Length: 76
Image 1 (tube, helix red, strand yellow):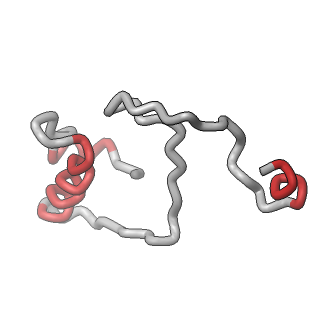
Image 2 (cartoon, rainbow, N blue to C red):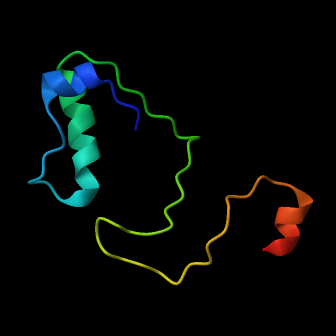
């Protein structure tokens, strides 16, 4: 998420009373209701290497995100 400081000063920070996976939805809804523009970009991607908020740590192979090169494809 990309947030403006002025927006956060107006609507407040994340609601700590909400479950971890819904606080961003609440923040966007409050921003929209306050007149701020919100965007949903379905083409965007996020790669989670760890679950810091929940303490979930999977057996992950740490590697840099792929650049699409042949070298990356050969090493996976």
